[in-house]
Length: 479
Ligand SMILES: Cc1cc2nc3c(=O)[nH]c(=O)nc-3n(C[C@H](O)[C@H](O)[C@H](O)COP(=O)(O)OP(=O)(O)OC[C@H]3O[C@@H](n4cnc5c(N)ncnc54)[C@H](O)[C@@H]3O)c2cc1C
Ligand code: FES
Ligand code: FES
Image 1 (cartoon, helix red, strand yellow):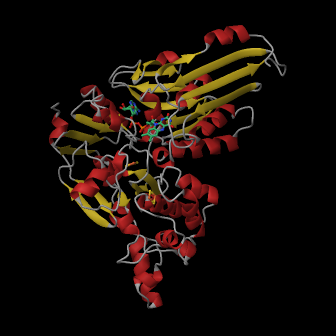
Image 2: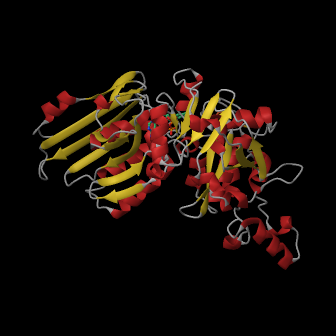
């Protein structure tokens, strides 16, 4: 095992499950949440289908206290891809915490029973959790929101119509509206309200949702101090400063920088990434930052795709049509990317650095001329994204100790147009069979082509730029 003086000390992993505090003194860096729930805690409501993020049977809700916005952020995620060690300071809600026959069904569960929305019931806990996470974020979702929320949940026997009917019929939210105890100081507020009304907690808080643990909200230790976990198969380190991350990478160059783990998890399983040390990169402020400047829109490498979609929406609203072409093309690509559970945890940096030949963001980023900001302990550099950056599937032309910090997507200009295309077996759920990014600049409002950039990717072939098309189309009329 790699040694490091700083690693001699270690922490116990602390997280909450359905309101209950879990302390794991020696969490294993290779164990995922699904395995831990089912094998260690015997919480078998969360089901195991594919084991690789593709069926949604293992969907849970992850909630974190966001220090910057002072709000709780809830996302749905596939437990089979969530590393146990990444849960430090996280509140996990599983179907057991939402409702049960013994303790009363949640309105979401009741709606499925009433509408005939399940047969064998295997997909049901995952469906319930996807809908539950949606309602915790948006009290009055539209039918399109519901469809998107369960887009990553497969049902093999009932069919989706009764499930959608059930969820569309759910009257959501607490009757207290904005004054719901979930929004107003948690348990303390609930107690005050029960005292004032002379009612039981169940009568006051009809949702009976687990309240976000005050300990996670009050203690900054969970988000602002380095954590080291030591388990059977190695050491998991969660730095919270860029300097610490770069020092660790210099000391352990082969250690993966795990973000959403939607690619790294699989590669570790098949031995593609082997190291006794795993570094979690999701809490570094520079990797989480977003900025609009004269150069364009800069987003940190640890920004998730769900967050990037919102950031792009905001950037599009702040720019004019000429400037926003690249942002629109990228946003469209994200809307067709994986499932919501994947987009909620997968990061923009992870997508670029995993260098999959069919990665969906890279073809668009390449044709926009996006700039990558790279750092190591001793160097800092800016690299314009081209196909040469990728030297094969899962390989990039960077040193092992280098880390992607952020990406700048430039503004487009007048007469420039950008699009992204994706062909896959299931839109909004699946990886590409073929994808493309296309950019054209016309000569001063006529149809003569000044510049054309075409980049293709796909399953099983090397990403390429169609450079001859560029030469042949130069100053030609487009038809
Ligand atoms: C079910 C499923 C569906 C998917 N659908 C799609 C799809 O539609 N389109 C698509 O393009 N991909 C898809 N993927 C692939 C994957 O989700 C993406 O590539 C994702 O963006 C990876 O991001 P991540 O944060 O999970 O990276 P991780 O898995 O955490 O990391 C991936 C690799 O990048 C390295 N890395 C990450 N960040 C950095 C950094 N800042 N600096 C240095 N190295 C870094 C890690 O060390 C690791 O080697 C899918 C995956 C699954 C499981
Ligand atoms: S078991 Fe299929 S997504 Fe996790
Ligand atoms: S009810 Fe059987 S898989 Fe959905």
